[in-house]
Length: 120
Image 1 (cartoon, rainbow, N blue to C red):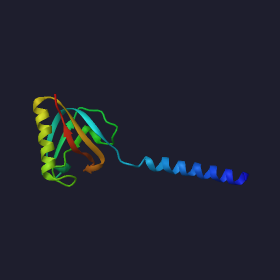
Image 2 (cartoon, one colour):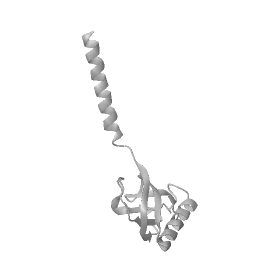
Image 3 (cartoon, rainbow, N blue to C red):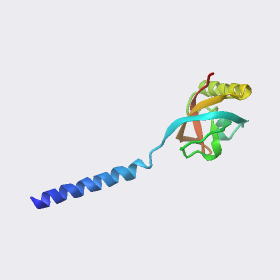
Image 4 (spheres, rainbow, N blue to C red):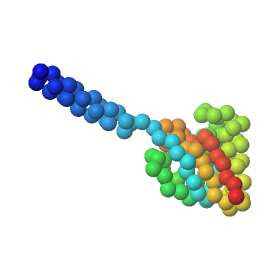
């Protein structure tokens, strides 16, 4: 009887350790909010278009630059173009924007924003 309890306890500890260690490798996604400070387009790098947002994020995305995915690899070119258009509008109007960013989707190491909204 003593051996069964000890064995079950050990199995529980091992399972818990495995779950904790595997959860750290998963991707994260969150809304990144702030004003668009810079816009960037490129014919071959960073998914074609990027925005630099004045923001803080817990994601592993470098330097607050986010690709809007204009190349069409993670969402359609039409959707990406609309998202980038909205980012440009927010930039021109000097209002904060909210971009849905997933750190498992990247172009040249930069995270991709797949959704956007703003309003007053």
